[in-house]
Each structure stands twice: as structure tokens, then as C-alpha cells.
Length: 370
Image (cartoon, rainbow, N blue to C red; front, side):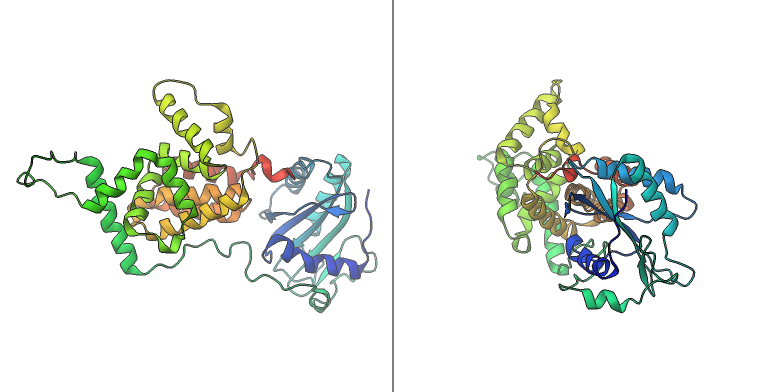
């Protein structure tokens, strides 16, 4: 069930992987499924820990490949920081992948290994035990290699301290406006001891009357130009699970679906059953979300998390984690979820995303080419 790829072709293939993935993989297993002779995406996984059951790990990997419609072949590549002096790194893992593929009737196009000082193919009988020189890969590089590895870009953007202070102040004012009723028009001055409500807070809180429009407008705005009170309102919304879930469902599709999610949330709070097709989105099932909208929402929520005071940050971070997971960036999702867990260990959405990542669960749409 294997097809040998000549060394020059293998070098060319390896040089293309960073461009396919959008980063240079490190300490990773990369699986490239094929439909016939055409590749149909790529999957990156962390290398299994020492002592792990490699056959079980390989079976999980092939389970992912077999979820891709019409995938009938794969190429596997191990990227390790180990030396090739004692043999190609990851050879036992690649052997397990080949056995699992054979059991599933999946053709193995190649089984490659890249170490710190060499590379090679387990299917190349002429490959030296210590691999071939890494220079061959650089010579075969047909496109610019993206900077960074799979963890790059998972941090929060840098924001000026004054902007963060302004958002923190605005958030306090928004919370006051939401907690205190508006004064009667006949009151000339606030009651003695009453906290004055900031007029901008009152104005921005009014946007909650049409929260779906608020979420949609925020998606179209430049995250770097958010006014402090607008940012504060969104931070507050993402800290409320019901509103956060409405935002996620809406950002994954459109405003019409956001209206349905908002109505469903209200009905659920009154005892009605939550619609299954909306709940499916949160679990990674159902129609494939618009990746452009998800990416814009991620840019927005990363900015909000950076601007928010630490105590108000978990909701935005958990939203970042879910959006990253939905985009197939599980490494980033884990990073944001761990940041949220440090601030609020029992945060619900955070724990859900961490559970997804820990078992290698990916959204169903990641396996569909629609």
C-alpha cells in the first residue's frame, strides 16, 4: 500500500509544507491527506510523549484522515529537534502510521523525518542511516518560508497602557450604568451618596437594545480604533456566557443567525429547549462557518482581551480560544484557554476548549472541503 517518492521530490514536498500550514512546524507530526494525486489540506499534531502508545496514537491519526471524504492516501512527516546520528527521528512513530494506514486501506505516499542535522524517508532504500543533508531542503524551497512555528502569533497584541486604563475606567462606568436605574427626569441632582452615571456609559449601554447589531458592527470595525466605551461594552458582553454564545454563533455565520441565537437564549432561560442546530455550532458540528468572519472576530477578541483588566479578561480569552479552535488552530486555542484558566480556573468555555484540545477533538467542518 505504499508508493516511493524519490528524494528530490520528497525534498520539494517538505519545502512546501510550511507554506501549506502557514508556519514552520517544530516537534510535530504533519499528515497530508491525498485524494488521488492531489493533496487536500494538512493536519499538524504534537509529537506523542515518551512512553506513549504509538499504535494507539497512529490509530487516532488515521481516524482523522479517514474522516476526510474520499481521502485515499497520505504523506506523513515528523519534525524533530533530535539528531539523525542514531537514525531518523520518529521512525517508530512513522512505522506505526504505516501499519495503521495499511489496516485502513490508505496508501502511504511517503513517510518522512526531519531532524536537527538531517532528513530522510523511511521509504527510500538509498537514504543513509543518518539521513541526507538539510541543505537539500533549502535548495528545494520554492516559496518564502513563513516566519515562526505553530505557536507563533498566539499572544495578545501590545496595547498602550493609557488605552487599557481608559477601557478599565469605561468598564467600571458601564457596570455602574447597568446596575443603577436611570435617574428620574424630575431629579435636578443625584441623590446624596448616589454614584453619578457617566453619560457615555448610558449611551453605549443603549446599544444592548439591539445587541445583534452591536456585535455585527463590531465585526466590521477596525479593532485598533475601538473607542474605550465600545470596547468596554464588548468586554462586558463576552463576560456574560449567554451573550458570549450569541456572539460566537453570530460571528460564525451572520446577523440573522445571531437573532435566532438571541431568541433561543431567551426562550431557553424560560424553560424551552435550545435548538440543536445552534448548539451544534459550539461543538463543531453543522454548517462550516465563514472563516473570514471567524478571523475578524478573533482579531477583535484578541484586542479586547489585551485591553481588558485581568479580572474581566477570561471571557474574551475563552472566546479567542474557541475561535482559534474553530479555525483549526488548536495550539493557539490551548494557549488562550490556559491564559483564561490562570485567571479563572473554573471558567466554563475555557474548560470546554481545553477538553477539546486534550483529546485532539477538531470541529467536524475541518474535515470537509465545502
